[in-house]
Image 1 (cartoon, helix red, strand yellow):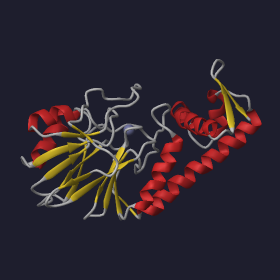
Image 2 (cartoon, protein in one colour):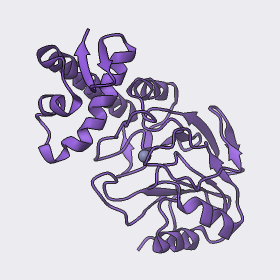
Image 3 (cartoon, helix red, strand yellow):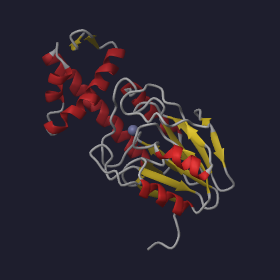
Image 4 (tube, protein in one colour):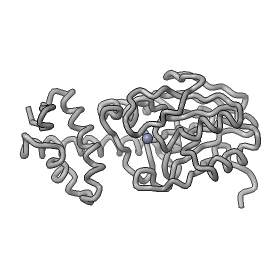
Length: 271
Ligand SMILES: [Zn+2]
């Protein structure tokens, strides 16, 4: 057993699933002035574990975004520990959101949370969710990426709160920060962050090229039919999930003026 906690300690909740990988990661940062990032879902054992590890030293709770696997424990922990909640308000209330999260302080891009032990810089990264924030722990050069970058599972981009165009821009944005480790919302720490960022961007653009090429062949087409050929490399059981990503690509191509969409018949066409 470990004798002492890491300066940035990852604590994984027991909510493993196809969307959440091994479960949601909560992070405890610091020694005597602790920041808790993403308290996760309301699971009693996880909440008790965070309180125990925090040893009465948790001073604030930060949330990366308001999906139901990341923020629901914030309200109960905030009240229990009498500490402020920080993050951004819910913007588009789709079926994935936790409505209970009400930040005491709404964080803006570039906001700093300074303690004697470390500084956290807020990085607004819309894409997976419009209110998504990454947290850059400056002295340790660690970027906590929530669901902007995960390890081991693909980030879901679901229109309309999710946006592929924003997602790619927000990945590019990370290049401006000097970090050497990623603490993802799901899965283990990742080293060599810029290689990770490059890989995700390449992978998404490659998929976009496939969307365009299949659309050229099958247009006009519904997303339900198009997903079969665009995601022919993915288990068809996962196609209902892949449709979200497909549509996120299609909405980006719509914004880019490459495709048209017939809202009544739900049909996509190559322009
Ligand atoms: Zn999420």
